[in-house]
Length: 142
Ligand code: T46
Image (cartoon, rainbow, N blue to C red; front, top):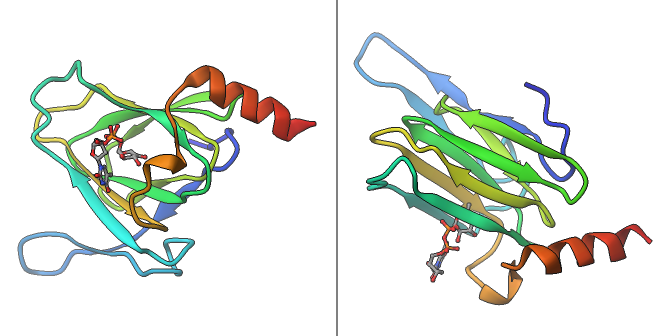
């Protein structure tokens, strides 16, 4: 599926399957991941498929989000266009660039999210109000 929202795109990791059990995927900083990685975090133990995470945008942070087990739906909104993407392949990630409202939901059983981020955690980089997000997008368009 093409990603039509701004500040996004697909990242495909090399996936190695050999004559042993298991699948090996590799992410290289500033190669497949389009920035230097400063932080990696994961989200697991999602007990309810009706849980909702995200619902924010970042001012400057760049991230790539993967679903390394199970599946979930990623809703993207650049302030003009919206798109829902199902993440279910462990080697296919989605870029979450700055100023992209994102929401994660409809988690399958055993779903595990892995995120590579360009910087350390900084709450002041989060936009957690959708109204503020839209105001900032509209200001940026002028
Ligand atoms: C994002 C999506 C994809 C920290 O203290 N350090 C960290 O590195 C992170 C990621 C979170 N936190 C704290 C901040 C909150 O008190 O953990 C708590 C939960 O964070 P949040 O509500 O932002 O979690 P999600 O799942 O909604 O969002 C996370 C990332 O925080 C966010 O940057 O883009 O995953």
